[in-house]
Length: 218
Image 1: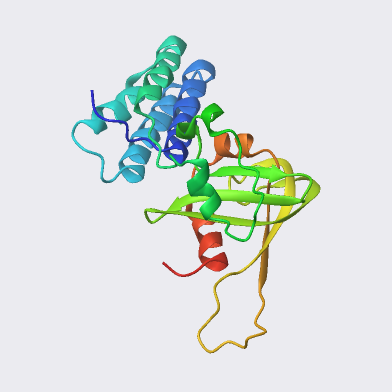
Image 2: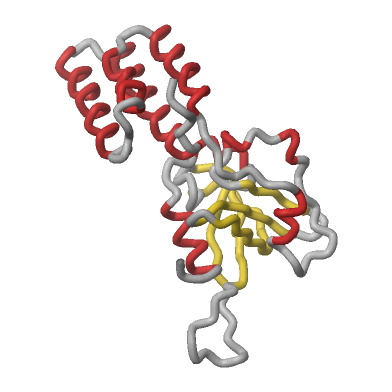
């Protein structure tokens, strides 16, 4: 058995491919169409995991030969053992990410399975603040800002239509030579329910672009 290696967004993306093939096998009568979906899934694995080891590849490709609902369901259960996380942190470590906030309300970390998170997010309703913690290029980083609930909309992180809020934060990075009065606010619509967002997210690129604009180049 290989070590855990599937981060949350990768697991979600793989689950999406498994679900698509499962649906094709269950509902499509044309074998050519099913075979097309199967070949597409195989190609996706190669593209999505270019650095997969010889030990990991058989596991990643295993679902592409499946045909029965029970097989797909058991495969997803098997993947649970290979889910990885890089979000392990203590309350003290998280508090240090927000030095200007004296009474930071950190979630109860003992109740959170970080393997199911791409980022740790929470809301302080009383302060009207939203918080996000993410490991970016090996470093734990945190951003916070105001949030304004909106109606249904597309979340910039998971690209799904959900209940969203406008999350706005002040960029900490100042370009060289900028005025002492330099001020830049950035905002994006994102899921109000961070658990839903983490369940849906399949790509970290939008999050990392947002962090680069809000924090600093890395």
